[in-house]
Image (cartoon, rainbow, N blue to C red):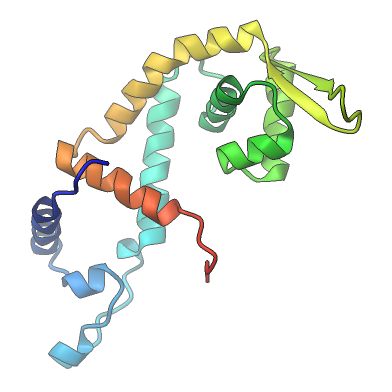
Length: 183
């Protein structure tokens, strides 16, 4: 595990606070009215959900403009990667591997099958179970996309220094971790 440079993170927060004129307490969802005698307004543009959504939209735009296959979406790419890594898989296994819900993965599988990138077959041990496999054409798309995937990640994080990139990935993993107490 890469150690986190907390001083670098603090410098980033302080720089942001200075640029935006916002208190760090407000930025992290707190209430600093006890200290100042006033209540900061709820700034939707400073909330984690809004910022994650905005960053994701930016990432998707970068993906679409840099993908070697213009018809491939980012979620389809993730699904092909999962099939490559796992081998033949059920839809349930793909849902777990990609964090894509069952209804969405069903549509993705249909579109990838229509393009001839994957194949569906019945499980020999359990005839009720459908197994999804990557076809050679799907492998070829992945081979073309792997370098683009690295470029897309680089472009998404281009404004971040190395410490910020490590911190971002660490924090996103921490937020994304499954927790028994979601609410």
